[in-house]
Length: 437
Ligand SMILES: *Cc1c(COP(=O)(O)O)cnc(C)c1O
Image 1 (cartoon, rainbow, N blue to C red):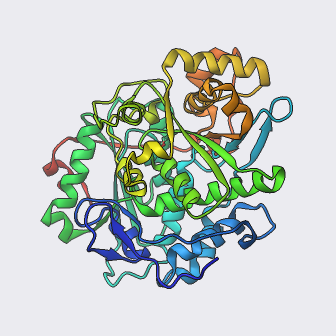
Image 2: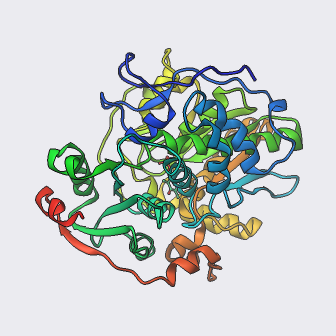
C-alpha cells in the first residue's frame, strides 16, 4: 500500500472545507449540509492484508489509512477489536457453491447496523474533544437504527443517548430493542410519524438553547463513522473469496438509504477484489428508476415487508454521485433491481424449500435479484448475497412462509428478557426541550 500522509474528508457539496477523521465523526453532517467523503483513496493490494481471514485483523489494516494523521489513528486497531467482537461468516450455498451469503447479523441487535454503530461508539470513546461536556446523541429512528445505536452506546461513560421513535408505528420487536436499555439510554415514543421524529431531531440540533445545554451529536447512517466499518467487512469478504476461489466477489446488497452499498463501492475504490455491485430494492423504486432513466425523482416512501428499506429519498445517493461524477454517473458503476412484496414472500418460501436457507424479508430481495440476473452474468461471476438481518427479527412474516418456528439467536433472546420503558412525547420542540435532561 502507498503510505498515506494525512486523511482529510470533504463535503459532497462544498470543495473548501476539509476535516480530519475525528472531526468528521463528531460533526456527522458537514457544515454546508453535505456528507463527508474521503478526499483521497488508499490503494490496497491483497498482499497488504494478514493471511488471517478474521474480520478484526483485516478491518484494522483497512481502516488505519482512513484515520491517518488523526489523534485516534493509534487506537484504530483497539477500536476495531472492541467493536467487531462477533463474526461475519461467509457461507457457500447450493450445489457447487451456487452463491455465497455474507451473514452480517450476529451482533447484539441482529442486523448489520451493529457494525457501524459499535465502531462509532468505540471511536467516540477514544476521541479527546476540547469540549469536556458529556456527549448527547439524539437519534430519530423508524425502527432499526435506534436499536443498534442504543445497544452500542449503552453504559458508555460520558455519553447519553435519546431515541425518538413514532409511537405505535414500529414493530413489537423493534420497540423492545429501542426501549429495553435504561441507564444512559432514554426512549421517547413520539406522538407522530417518523418524519416528525426526524424533524424534531433536526430542530433540536438547530436550537440555540439546547446546543448550549448539551453537546449534541448524531449517530445516524450518514455519519462517516458508520460507513467506514461497513466497507471493512466488504474488504474481508472479498479477500476471502479471492483466496478461496481466485476470483473477484460480486455483491448483491439489500438497499434503502444506500449506506451499505456506498460502503461496498468505497471498498472497491481502494482496489479490493470486488467485481459487480448490484442493489436490491423493495417496491421503493427511486434508485432503480434513476439508474434506468437518469432522472432523480425522490418520492414519499411506500410501506413494504422489508421495512428497513422503505426509503423514497435515500440520503447517501449524494455520496454515490460524488464517487462517480462523470457521465453517466452511478449507472456506470452499479445496477439496481426492485422487488415487490409478492416476490419477497415467494423467494423466502422457495429458498427454504430448495436450500433450507431462511431469509429475512430484506435479504430475500437480494436472493430474488440473484435469480433475476441474466444467465451468463449469474454464471460468470462469483456472487455474494449480503444478509442484512437475522430472520428471527421478522418472525411474524417469515415463520408462516416456511411453516415452522424460527430459532432465536442468544443475543436477541437476551434483549427480549430486559424490561422495557419509554416516555410518550408530544411532537414539538418545546416538549422535547422540557424532556431532555
Ligand atoms: C438499514 C437496513 C437496510 C438498508 O440499508 P441501507 O444502508 O440504508 O441501504 C437493509 N436491511 C436491513 C435489515 C436494515 O436494517
